Length: 333
Ligand code: NDP
Ligand code: MG
Ligand code: MG
Image: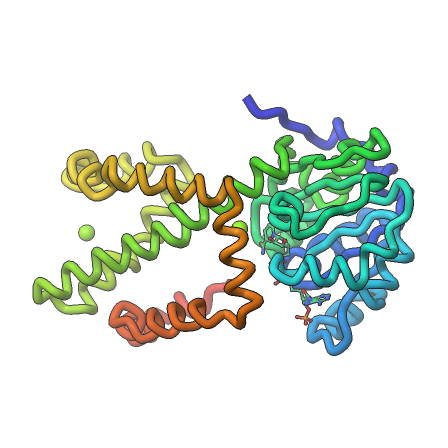
């Protein structure tokens, strides 16, 4: 079983005794910086020249400096910018500002796990990743609650890296809900696998294939959209609240029977064999290398795939149908 840590296991005064730099002020960055500050931590935000989020950070009462200045001032540096640019920002602004005993923090292990960032041996390297989007992390903190988080230590130069990570997690509300101990390897590989095989890749391919099957058989796209995409939310909400059991309790017996007998015909042994190949390519670094080549090569294929799907009948149909559902677009992202 996983090791769990709560408020009582974490000492807030550790992070309160450090100067923290939060590099980036996006989804995670704003939540971490604001909650650290509200927890009595000395925090500055590091943002690049021409940053769009700079004004917002300043409006919210935070001091914004360049990433290099932030890294130089602080002894805990949390990297919260998009993963593909982290290595460049690390090389240019962070690396030379690391001192003995500093801590380099991440919310995703990608760059360290695959060697795009190679921290020196004299700093702590740790991960604190809330298991939710930044806006929820911040809202929960403000409401006196927290989003569960995971924490890991890749390199323990000081011997206190995990206590520091727990202290950081406490300052952003993580230990209120519970922090699970993991490793950079486990976090990175399961995160990539989950989003590729199930959450993003698996789910969108399943929705598209179902939609196409109905439309090719002559059914109206609008009806196919509702059955294959729109209603997925209801099902996922039930799973989220109570697992497969609650979903099956809520749907009709006919739907439940269809679930048992048809699911395994759709996700077959061949699908699972392919999932294992996907996992192997994640583990051996093939995926990471190809993705970074694609990213730094100008995102040509990425943009092709994007445009293709934007033109897909599923998407054009959905765009029109969602206009009929005022509550859908009104929902906060
Ligand atoms: P975002 O895409 O939201 O980060 C954008 C921020 O990075 C903006 O403030 C942007 O500035 C800034 N930025 C862009 N380029 C630079 C630069 N060269 N120097 C300094 N700042 C820069 O990131 P996320 O919050 O989504 O992700 C951050 C990390 O957290 C990643 O490692 C991610 O994997 C991880 N994570 C994300 C989660 C999420 O919910 N999104 C959940 C858990 C982990 P501007 O726009 O002003 O130019
Ligand atoms: Mg991910
Ligand atoms: Mg139905």
